[in-house]
Length: 153
Ligand SMILES: [Cu+2]
Image (cartoon, rainbow, N blue to C red; front, side, top):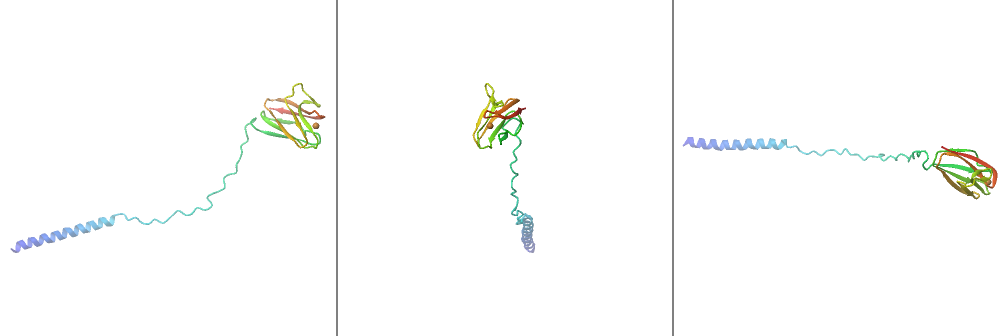
């Protein structure tokens, strides 16, 4: 009888031991579970990151596309000769307080079939685009002494 009790007791102890071991193992396993730690916020409010974008830098347009050359008429003079790229619009501005013209011709006389004949009242502006390379004579039909040469390259 003692033997059976011993065996029973051993069985109970063994069961308790197994339970205890299981509990310990389970607990260790549970402790190994990665615990999510609150990560410190690294993201700081970025200040001054919004830099003003680089100023618009218009690239020089290819020769002959959309360029504008200015001719200011003052004191009954075109002010000098001009060399431009083909495709350049030459804008004449009458800075005098009386009328002028910018006409395809020489010494106040337009050519038979003038390529351009801009009528410029006082203070007015108008332009002509030279698309073909060449040498062009410009005169004012009202003032034969007004002459200039525009070279288109
Ligand atoms: Cu004139």
